[in-house]
Each structure stands twice: as C-alpha cells, then as structure tokens.
Amino acid sequence: MALTLTLVMAPRKKTADDPRKAVNLALGKRLAQLRTLRNLSQRELADRVGVVQVVVSNYEIGKLRITAEVALRLAAALDVPIQELLQTDTPPEIVQQPKPSRKVLERLEKIQSLPRRKQDAILTTIDHFLNSAAAS
Image (tube, rainbow, N blue to C red; front, side, top):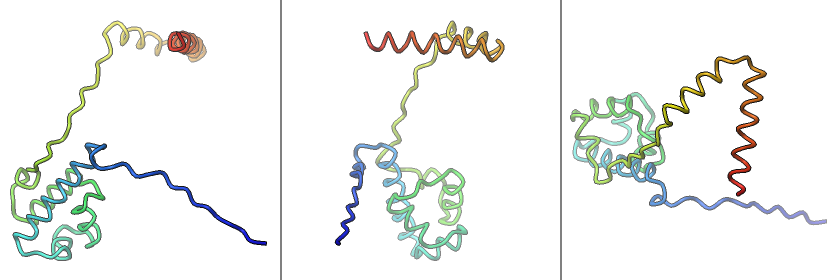
C-alpha cells in the first residue's frame, strides 16, 4: 500500500507587489554597499552591532526588516550618519489612511460609555445594516 503526500504551497508575492519588501531590499542593498566600502565582513559588522552574521545577511538580502533601533546601531557601527544608511533609491510609500468623521467618533464615544449589553445591541444593529448595505 503506497501513501502519497502532496505539499501545496501558496505562491510567494513578488517584491514589486509589496512596497515594504521593496524598501527592505533597498535598505539591505545600501547596508551591503556601506559595509563593503568599509572593508567589513558580515561577521565583523554583526559583532559590532551585537547580532549574529546570519542576521546581517538577512538584512542585506531584504529578508528581515531593519528596525529603527537596529538602523541606529548599524549606522554607528559603520560610522555613518543614519541619513546615509537610509538613503536609498526606493523611498517608502506612504499610504494615507482616511480619517473617520468627527460625528462618527462622537457617536462611538457615546456608544462606548453605555453598558456592555446595550453596546452589543447597537453594534449588532450596525453590523446588520452594513451587511444589508453591502449586499445591495
């Protein structure tokens, strides 16, 4: 009796589809450039920053996101201003979130001050209304 196992994997998103990944990749390339210009190995930079070499490698290939704290430590280890490290050809894409109206916020504050049962009743009513509006 033969048993067959099939593994199905979701296709990976391309870097171009996700602006955050593009920024990670651009920052990683910039990090690698600066490290190379300073004649440092990934291990030497990792030692200066307080991480292991694999982490530096993952930053450079864009696999890991560089946090603000790590960016400051990397800039100090490379002896460059933070602006020089963050200067890339791919500026981060800023997405403006729409602000809720003042009337909606005031009503939400009033709902929040009600007892839990009344909140649930109002939210259920709102959910039903929104679902019927979406179906129309």
